Length: 424
Image (cartoon, rainbow, N blue to C red; front, side):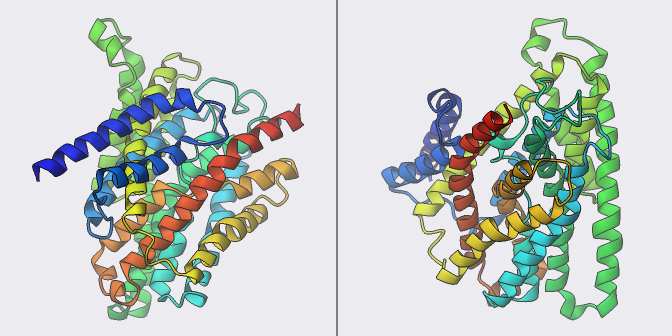
């Protein structure tokens, strides 16, 4: 036990060191940091000769770790968005949420049901888990820090930054809006013991309407409360200066905790709180501190989780993977999401090249790990694990996230540079 603890300390220390040093080494290189973390994790666990903790055996720990990094990433994503909130200016976001995301879920569910022979509840779960664009791993295609001018806050008609805005705002909202569909899968898993209309009515009223509304209301209130603390009293002591930016973490935990206690969607609450906080004092310099603190915390946690992910890969996470599962994973990434994205953005004012990039770069990541762990922890899915083993679901999701991390991670910077040059 003691040896395992000390090995865990070594892994954590190397992950933190990598998060601090690797950005300097690989700046402007055609490779993303998540790739380095995953590869380093695999090498590290092989070198230490130990197996990484299996998410199938530790679903509760997996859920909580991934939950923490996602909510902090949502705060960072919300603080980046400089575009004033307007239904027209945010039209790309609403299209991606209302059209692209449901189409992606349906397409993935059909593949799971028809190709893999999954139970309908498991097929819906696959769609819900894989649908969200990840706010953690999509940093290369997200907007820059607050007030950098990359987000069309001056002229919404200017297409400069439209890709980054669309993907950042989509990732912020759809990580919360995947919850109703995850809960739909959970309801379907237990529908055999529930009257036909009862579970559907409860899903619409509670999982869709009530929980989304609670998330929005709690997020708005938490953002207002934290904003008054942040901007009401300037830092006047050395300790206060040292702690600058920590309010971002406080806002994250407050919004998430209150929303979850009220049986709402905490992911939505966190992102809404970040937007409210960002719009409270539009041009204040302190937003840079808030953003940097959130990003630093997110990067440290992300590095640790991806190192563990690399360890699980060499420890056999993908062993249950079959060729049909590989085919489904590739089709989801490179056919279903791009087509759904193009359909969702059809008729949008963005240039066709920008719409194609937005449709293609729906990066899958740590959010998918969270949703899968959360669903498999639910009692109604215990029986379904006998029909479709949890190992198989983890193998499929792990393969999709791994492929997305490498393909999108390598392509993101060159594609964005090429598109920026084309604009110029």
